[in-house]
Image (cartoon, rainbow, N blue to C red; front, side, top):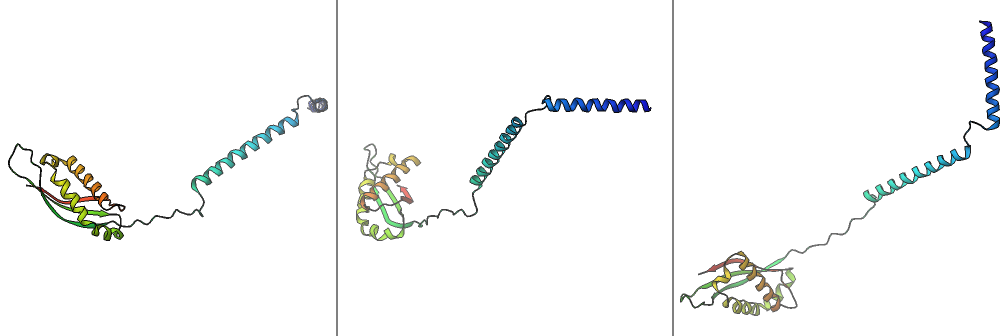
Length: 178
């Protein structure tokens, strides 16, 4: 066993000498400069990726000091009742029977400050309604599309009468064709 131990000690000494020789000659070792350059580049890349992710998260979620845009105050619309309009419709000539149109209308104004202007021009508005409605035929009032067209035309005529002011819409309370 002692011979084996001596042999082992001698083997270890030879291996130690061989290791020292390779260390001195530079064989089996990686150059230190190249290894550290790769490590530095990987670290810089990781910092750039993490920094970009952090910046993106900050921009996406925003900061707590962010101010909210001011909400515009919307004024509620005002409404004016127009006197009831009763007109006879244009005759097509095929029937001798006279038909009448009875309409109750409400004007929707953008705000209540425009009410005096519309009230002073109400005779003009009524004239525009009377002259337009008298030219209608009973077939012009059939279906929802025709009523929508009538509403749009009356809105246009009221806006001409109350210019430079504008109304939002003409609303029908009642439409009766007799």
